[in-house]
Length: 369
Image (cartoon, one colour):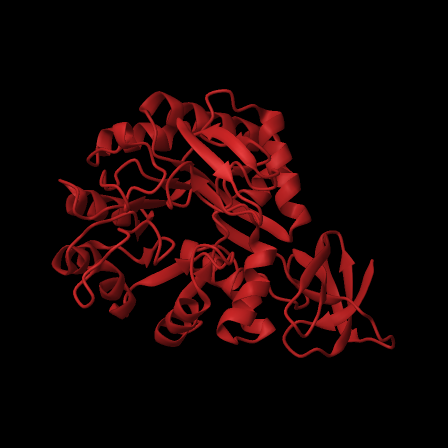
């Protein structure tokens, strides 16, 4: 297979030869292709789509395959299936179902190399809690986590928690020692608590600027604290609903493209038409334009869009280059999670994406190779 396309970093036409799933050659193309080529996206936070939730007590192997296929159509070559705050039984079922599917399907295992547990050790306050069910928010429990990790076959690679929870610092130290990436999120922590969490091993912030109170102190607050911390990377949701363009631009300027990563935070309602739905034991609503909210509130409940839309948006919002935007959604999350970074070089896995790109920032995925 020879792919003729424009290289995402230079715009130069290249011919990429793929043999047995790897890049066998990269040369100048003698064609003038319209498509662009880049590493496929890696999204660290996919909750589901089309009404399928990884948290569902009825999750089936076919559901897992459906989510993977839909993500692939949006340029997502791999991702972290994400389970959110719930009772132990539901979380164990979700992780064990995922693990069984991946144990029996090598291709799906490649697409989902590790899992993200977002909660249940999060703030129970309105605002920071977001759409996470209040009744299941609780303090960290190492024994409980170990049982969930066993159910997941050792695949939980990232845990999002609120550092102000009782026992959170010791829990963070244990996670870090076990090679699990600790993310700060859905938190009402003080500056001191955030700094202590970083010293204990926290490495990143989950969807910075979201999962927050509607009103914050103008100077001393947990958003500024995490933004100013050079030791913390941060994921941001650039779907056009979670953060305004001015804030995205500020985040990019302060953190720089080397310490940011993009996630779509695609919810179980992603890809569904406008309407009212029930998910996560909560009444949710998809508004025209794809915004997902907790019914009757301004609180967002994940995203109705996927990573391709987020990459196009960050170019328009923050003025970053196409190359940087793609890397924010491919190289950066892989680096954070300790996974191999895909590059367009001989010998590398052919985990590639062909897409159309317009100067105004429109991005349309053709296929993932």
